[in-house]
Image (cartoon, rainbow, N blue to C red; front, side, top):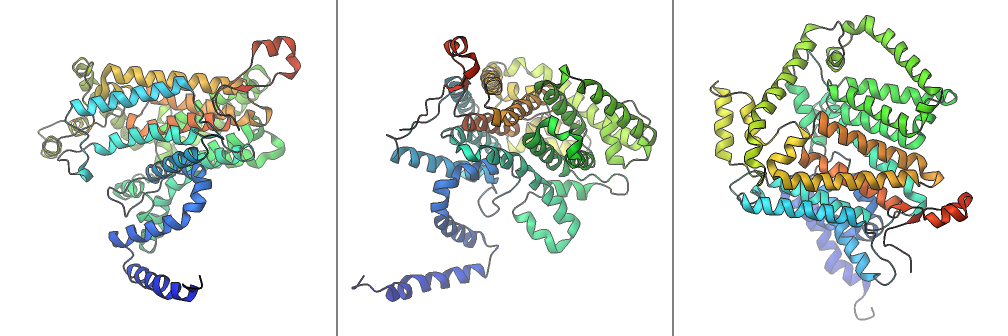
Length: 508
């Protein structure tokens, strides 16, 4: 440094760089400026990301955040998956002799088969249709979402989560979902807060703005936020801890989140929460105790308190309650029945097409001309309202969103992955360490609830896959693989039965 003083380094490099960044910050919404500044910020964060990239990815999987200055405005989890995968490869390359990657063969081969099916289908149906890559078709974002969801599984499950951080990472994974309500919050606060739409998706707020608030006010972003809060409480305390009267405030938080979720107007809130609590009740073994009668009593009390005043509740809440035969406002009933009938008609129209796409799926690629003509036909009354959604591939049904785009091969690959995931989650639940019992119980409960809801009620393959892959990846990572108990250990020392890890990771 005697030939190159520090002050000279500052004058030659640091000051000009600061001037350039200052000029770019004068136009913060310019895409070029943001890309350059973001890249510089990313380089400064590299030492932190080398250590915390897995935590960053786990948080981003459930976060509703967009990277607005990148082409296509990708969601945060897509960028986090790429970054975490890169650092995971670098970490493993440098420390290859000291650590091995966790590998669960049934999950690995199932996801690789699913990746192969999607690639072959894309190639056989005209390509991915990525507009940002110059394609004349739509649909590339969906392929990217599916492939990134598969990559996210390997990025999260490659290395074990530190023992002391397993619970905190799991809580972070679920609590990140509260960011879904930021868009609605920005809309409610007014134009001075519209800058939040640069990072948080505005779709929920747009839907709220398009509604006639004089008839029905639906705050849609409260649905994922409410589910995130309820999931956080169940992971942290379990159902036993929530209903413990000594800590009454836990039940109040869950009940408040549930009521706020009903304000979204989605019937899915009521259905999913009911399934979630029923599965959790069974997994915790409460069905074998006196809590069965306590639960029935609480349900009857809630029903007795709600039913007489049901038609006086906000219309968004009444819309959720239309799943029950109650005396509700006609506007809420008609709106809910219209939505259900629209979906039933679309499913009826799609069922005859299943044999046509059984061996080679339709794929995700969409011809913009077909989409334009379908939308214009709906606009001028020459086509059914469902035609636009069918052309766009929005089937509002989980099984149809798999079999039509990818045929029987996609169904086989997806069922393989789901079955292997449930098996791994079940084993980790049965053989869980005492301090991780609550976490493993809810991970299994959450996955089963999502699968049941996806198959029976509503789902979109390219949207839901990331939730499935990230949930099972988190379980694999915090349990260091799939935990099993050797039979000889059970027979010789039943009192000291210690779960062992079947993954291939092991310290040096």
